[in-house]
Amino acid sequence: MRKERVLLWLSLVLNAVVFFFVLIPVLILAFDGTKEYGGYGAYILVYFTVDSNLLAAAASLAAAVGALRRLKDPDRPLSRVLGVFKLAATASVGLTFLTILIWLGPPAGYEGLFSNVQLYLHLIVPLLAILSYVFLDRHEPLPFPASLFAVLPTALYGAVYLTNVVFTRHWKDFYNLYAGGRWYLSAIVMLAASFVLGAFLWGAHRLFFSVLFRKQRTP
Image (tube, rainbow, N blue to C red; front, side):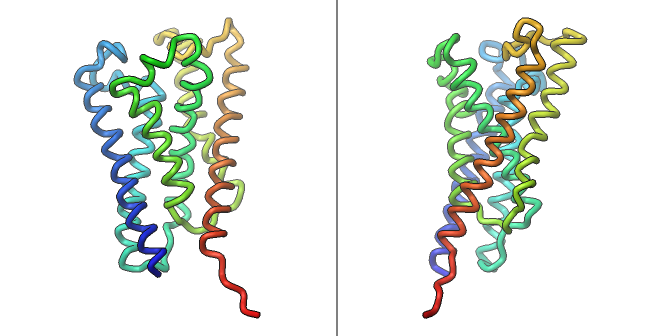
């Protein structure tokens, strides 16, 4: 019981931290985003960085509320629906981190991508969200196919990005995914990366909690 309550308090605190670490930088960008994001207000929503972080903030807020409720009833884990939501959101913000680390960082340099509000949206929030989901957010066990939901946010954003960059050309290719016309390869890589992230998070979460709360066998 003591172990469960400690876990709940840590989950509550860390999820609240993630929520505010997203809310404040996004508000800063919304009101003063010209320098880093090229626009104000709702314009910043064209970036997957912002969208994935907002999704993580919403999932973290829901998880924090769930943890608060569970402090009154520690034996009741988070629902599967909330577990799937948190998994998908964490995978999405994890994809943001990997995109910066592997794709955008090497040619552009990491200094600008990991400075000011970008430090929170590109690095701190993704790492804290992963830490929270894997080690703190206990929910009802999910079947492996639930990891497929990690692909959904990427697929939805990808459809919008593809339409506006390739077909209508309303947006610039700010993620450099057009790849000289081979955008379909970028799409396959991003969707595959989302699935791998989802599978990894599903497995890591399941392994950690199965070990932490395994029942002691009687001789």
